[in-house]
View 1 (cartoon, rainbow, N blue to C red):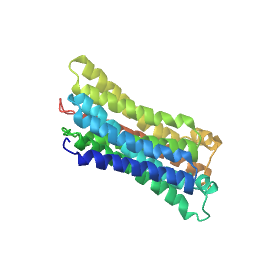
View 2 (view 1 turned 90 degrees about the vertical axis):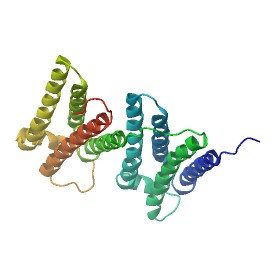
View 3 (view 1 turned 60 degrees about the horizontal axis):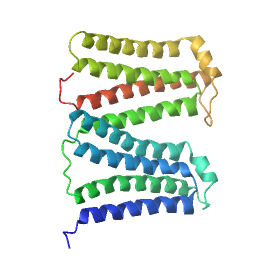
View 4 (view 1 turned 60 degrees about the vertical axis):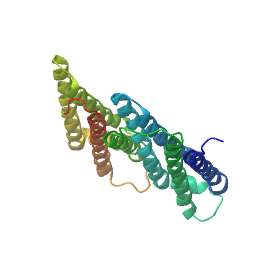
Length: 268
């Protein structure tokens, strides 16, 4: 008999517990199958963390750890989203009468996602693999990207259905990618990238001022269908939707920069 690998056994045991916990949640508490996305986010977070630790290339490590951070952020973001914005939807399908079980369903799903992420680490250890070159900057960057996208989705779905606000998130993303590319490029390509980054920052500032100060844009935002209970005044909801979209773009900008800064080549 070859040497027993307790890490692999523990990893498999934790996977079984996480799956069982998620199944019990769906079959005994609330059949709200969107909760499976939390479990999937945990699998992505753990799987790509291990893949990043085993990768050889620096760019590969950055990519894997960024996706791992996105998965980690998704566990948090989805748990908060389901617990707050989908509370009534989960409550409507509860098998149990107490509304506290809504939080229980979300909490158990979040726990199952965390467990499956942890199980990946145990399985890698059990296989005798050493995870090297962990890049916390890339993980933080992915986490921020995930949170920024969630914030933007909440704005356009639950506050004001003004889908043009998505432009804030995309501009923030493009600006950060251009800035990170310019910091590592040589010659004219770096200048072009910095110009694109500067233009993106300028557009973000212009849009947030224009959307919050222009009465024409405030009126256009008022016509967008709100989808929240007891919304604030029309004017304030329009302004807050724009400000939150602007914050989402800034967080996406910071997330990309954190990920890019994890590469050792040429700093910013």
